[in-house]
Image (cartoon, rainbow, N blue to C red; front, side):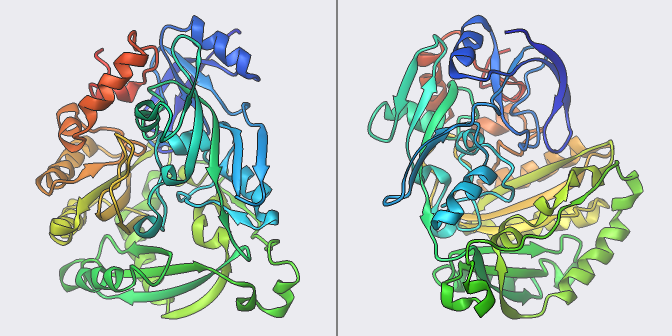
Length: 450
């Protein structure tokens, strides 16, 4: 197949890199591309934020057209499909049958292959863990074009290297995932307000076993006694009796809101510290402590209702900084990070705090028991130096950064944060001795020697 030279970027639009892009329509075409390429990385829907799916001056395989549904067992809820199928397409297929995703990130515009490669987590990690807990089998195309069947029982070492392996072990072709049975397309959501960090952490602890989903919006610009001011959003799948009578007639057909669109890049001053501070105050006071029923889209994917919302940051782009710190030092680490952000003069339009459960089983899985903080930060002058200051706080507290969001992490920090990296590299070298599968991120972090 012929390639097309394209400038690509992740969702944060930083960095932008040119690569030679191939777009196979069928598995056989993907095999031919894989055999002919010396250096390639799969690219799904482009929702990782940094350079995880970029490959400067090398090859990229656009997997989006490899998206056939292959089988579904309505009794067990096991769906098998090609890796290019999006989470949105799975929801559209499964919801009328009474099933939903067992784990979902904050956007449904992600391919299933990308979700597995990043071992994504959701608002239910404290109870259900990562998406890998629900993957029973996958097919992997290795560097020699052969197809390897991987599961927790068969080729298990390669399976756990591919889970969270960011596409560096091969091209994921097919995935079997066990879906979650539900009664409706709605959730029962309870809002609780926290005036400071101690209060929100106590709320996470007290509700860890009472609600399947939990996430806190956090006012990253609050300071002093109000640092950590938050709104906690607790959720559970609504049962049929939770719905009003008119909704009970079609419990799996919610009336989703019409999407809005941002047709152009906002000027850089639009998301200033002043405007974000005003928004944060309004958001906090607007949310009263209450329980209500809303559709799945409003709870899981609020930003998906705005097409091209990344344009709010303008041409400069932005990064999403997401870290996790263990419970033992989590409170002090989160406080230091918020203090550092507030004193820097930088504003994060979106700041989210979640509680994590058990360590992910993938060799490069991000979650560990503790607290995870995600911040959207505009790409302004001095950003990289500022991020290093944040990284040092994370390292001091035995935390780590999320590869799917990373743009600037240093390789020495990465090796310290991910103790199973040597094991991952050993497995990769065994199945991909010539390092056919690599990315700009992999070279930057020293996973691949450049």
